[in-house]
Image 1 (cartoon, rainbow, N blue to C red):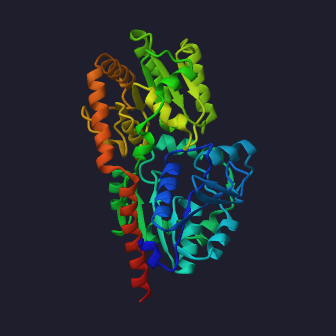
Image 2: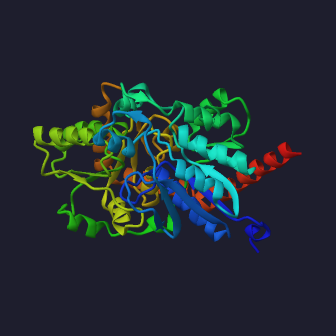
Image 3: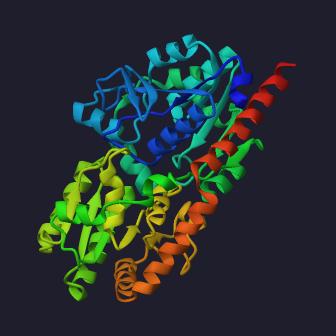
Length: 427
């Protein structure tokens, strides 16, 4: 008998800012995989989110029910392009209908918000009004965002008159982390900063996980054939949003140098374009440096698309040169396929990868970053035994520490502690 069968209320409501299959990222993967684990454990998870990037109010993704609600960005004078930019990244939205649904939803055990600001405040307020526990996960959007990244996120609303501040106050958005029954950080760096900045001890580090069985086998040969990649080419892969944060321009600069000494090399960039202007910069670089025949930009793949797994198996090295990275779930996915990784020494990646054992680090802010990345790619390409050893060690790492079942058990302990705090406060 599962623990859930002893509970009168089994519904767990997860609230991200948006949740669509066509614009998938690490946050969406975490929410979906955790929800699946909760289903297997007898709970009834459901995702409440906005209609951002979708017209479908009711959906089911990966077997998990999704409800979407109308929303607005409370700024005067926003253009449609600016609204869409905020949909894709960083928009501080407001949804009265979602708040009303949180208040009405029956059989709720607990609210888990994956959004901050106004939407996170709505979840907190609904939880307090209903005397339910509220847990918040920081997916890297609070304490470890560089100034340049913050600026790009704020650009669509820059100079606009904001009428939503009273609602932020009403929903206690600024008190979200202080008043939540528990705060979860996915990365070590943000966890340490949160412990310094949040005035309580209800903070846990809970790394993300990976579906080991899903990524164990894939058709790399077929992927290469479908995308006209020669069977003997050395393939460098990056799977992430096409976005300033992910820093694919640095990878292109490194690849240009690497390709000069390894002409058979190919670079594949896969991901949704959350910043179209940045995507155009990448295409311009490819054209200007005559890399059209050896670099491919492919659209983002759905989480349940077998081609996603095939892509990892098709590559010889995986590179994540992010400017900042709260965790880096794609590294776990690459390791699960036995691939060597090169990553930025930033954020959660610093505690995830061990230099020379499970991968290599680069400093994305260094003037020599492109040269070092190119040198590491050349080293891996010339030493196949080193590549296999790195991939093997990475695979052992995920097998021992990062399965979703392990993550879900730790999350259930956090939920129990949050509920216990709520009961003690009611006494």
